[in-house]
Image (tube, rainbow, N blue to C red; front, side):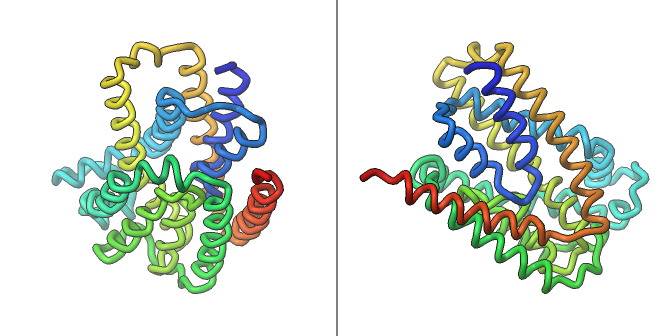
Length: 274
């Protein structure tokens, strides 16, 4: 894959993975419109590994505190996490639904569902859901109050992210808002929760490459550049988005999703085979 194409798609991944606008839809449609071929296991690993590194790097102190508290150690200075020593295990429970759905529906998600029609429809549908969540949620709770019903609700919502065009962050932040979490808490829990799911996807893809004896083909200059660009872009987007949510809501992203979804459906209609 040309280095320019790698950089463009890695930037798209880093920008859209953590904003509630669907990275899958943007990657697919960027390649679709430009006529690029991107369907390879190493490409999938490259993008997911970059965004996984972004989560691990940006939330490094949180991960240390979460892991320590989960095993009974008193470490870390985050007041919200201190009030919720079981948060690591709640996240583990919340990860189960997406793991099950990913196992059951991975083939459909990578084939039959990966169409402009599905993506456009989900962009609009989840956009409407985000608008409802923004208006319905009381936004009065932080991470320290996250409980089992929250974990189950948000975990079940994350399972829908296997459908292209949904947006993992969009659906889980919306679920958090419906549970009355404030915007920052909903986004922070969403990002932390995405790490096990993305890590699982990376592990599965690496295993698939091992079975196909193609792991040795992965460590190329393009691969390293793609991981680095995706990680740096993703880290910057996480920082910006959490800062943005301190003072603003999701409505601009709602409007973007709906308009983008309509454009996607229109392009699919125009470009459909005669």
